[in-house]
Image 1 (cartoon, helix red, strand yellow):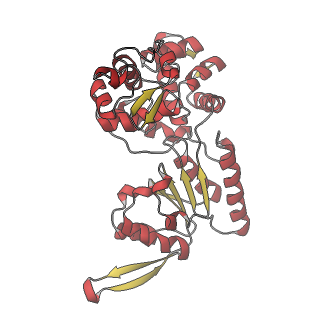
Image 2: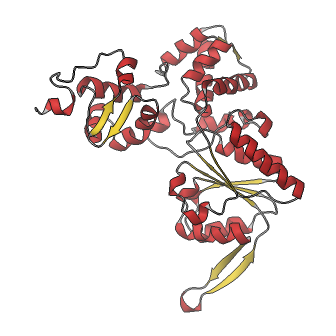
Length: 357
């Protein structure tokens, strides 16, 4: 229900539990997105704060302050940008940081904005430095200087812009330079959802998709959704397919569990790649510590895939820890896979055991 776009490639894009949007997500999101703040589920503090910002702007008859939304993919940044435009009764222009490689690209977008229009800039931290510096003046003074000519004969022509609202979204707020971050009037960090909130998301989406689901079925899907609404909706659609083909179309806990078992998403939301990483760490290296490159070779994946795709969720779930000596499994990882950790002096445990004392 509440999702945003994130570019991803390779294994991550193929995973059912990847937070990045895929082609099918894009096709169905328009129907499932909430249209105003009252329909938006979760992010209670952000929703209340944003409601005040927008209502105050409407009462003054002014454009809303620039808004910066940060957080993991799939939590609702794009959805909130569309809600901001709808609440302000303004059109919205959507682009992304990687698409703006030159200052001229940004100048062309800014010069075509209407008064009060919302400009949504996804992955704003990936914008080029020249465009970023142009954005400073545009946000603060609603003006840009267009450079005409080259060398000593170049001249700067000031171009006045109509008042607009910039909504920036980023998955890595720490990469934003302070001068850019300070020009946003309102900043918000999107948190992962609680299971109860995801159940509300699933029930709402099921109604829009005309799918019958009971409370236990929604809870089963929510518990495997990694705290992310986009993943919850994706799993709901796959469970819907299973219920339609192999059952009577009604999603119960048993049907949801069976369906997600087919798609290899376990009770904590781990998929094939996640379990492969844990199993290699536990069974081959005795729980670690083991180097990232060695672990990647063991599971047959690229180092970057393990580090950027599998590890973040495993660390967040408390199943894996990153240490100066390498990756280490936690007691929760042993318990989740139903294995017994070796004793401290067990031979062959970890890399140390592989190469002797």
